[in-house]
Image (cartoon, rainbow over all chains, first blue to last red; front, side, top):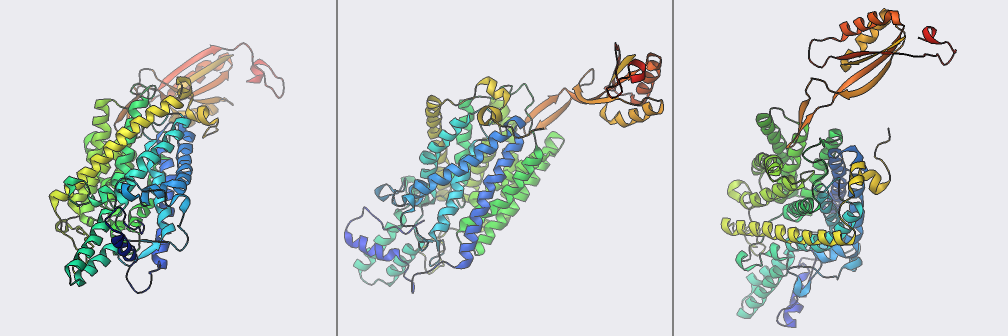
Length: 496
Length: 112
């Protein structure tokens, strides 16, 4: 989020007053407090750890040893590549002001971090509170890094490094930055609160209209999913606290499409392709869990009770999901496996991601229990029935888990189910408590899920085809047999 | 001279070594191998993927013995490694043309 003047409206007068309203009308300009800032920077470090080494080891342990260095290199490279792209133009496209296009994409006003200095601030979800914009920038950067890194699990062990590099570069630009903008380019709460205060104090019709116009301007100058700007959403925005849609459904469908286009690994279905190190995978999954507290609780943008709620939800949903996968596998396959246990943990983390700041702990617990059998069904029955080689189950865990969580969020936010309820910044006399409408909210959630599936699914397909034409997607059969470590990187992960 | 090659279950190795030492055999070579005979593999399941693992880990023991000790060595190995379950392994006896102790240059029986 950033302080943006609304554009494209009738009259410079509105523009001028809106500009004034863009500054919080509290005594003095608020400055970031040390606690919030420290937490946000800590969260950013935690989320980076989720990528390296968390995801790198989780994925790496699941492939054969001849492809370990390939996974590690791809993950680390993606982190580095996206770090640069985010700084140059990604942050601006995702969170900058897109002017008349702001419903679908930001602009380039903050490219090269123009205007984002050490004193720049970004609003949080509490009116009057701010964090350094640089903290917000780097926090969001770590999300932009891990999302594309998730995709590689689907086409692992057969897609060339050059293809992965080029694809990811194009994908973050064309798929991730827009979707992040749609869901997370939200209104500045201060602008709304100030305008609502003005409205309440207004005595003349003209003053009331002017104040209302400011409210409308602030609530409309957002990403279309965040603001519910599509006609059928009627202003009810989709809720996605930490990225069920932006990160998991997004990466999940891009992975599935990639797995389908690049084709199955040689020997899939005939040879044994077991994980070479469940030890590494368990280490990776554990680091993911610890880091995910930064991912979810950090998405509150400050350190308060809601942050603690998101933290707790991340803990209990994951515990429940781990247990659920373990028990389900024990009952249905006879033996509970380590791989199942850690897969359950990841599925729980994925599902609670969109709900983490909205659901109550018991709701999150229930979500954890429910998501594991669903994901287990998709990674075993559905995958085997259709025969696609989603090598590391990116679709079965991240896409399906993300869809489950995104839809559940629409239900679990309901105060009747222990949720925090809807926030309405115009309700200044009701502590911003908004009205919950089941049908409208589920419509919004469903819209976000579908929009992500379509934009990412179709967009990724086009990008894979382009990359195939430019550098070719798949390694040669001999190279695939020898292992991508040697073929792509001229080194082995292990020398003994 | 003969070379006795025994494919045995891995956990039997220490027993075999002790038993052969007891009958005067002073050296042997051990390799980790994989193989199958009539023992079927086991099934491993990773998420939804089921694998039939046909190659089971075994130990190959090679010991060169003078011809007059072959029977005693073969019987010793068989009795210590036999469990009665399928997969106990096999023993092969091959002729040896020459043997030489590298350090001293001793040949044939003196080299064993």
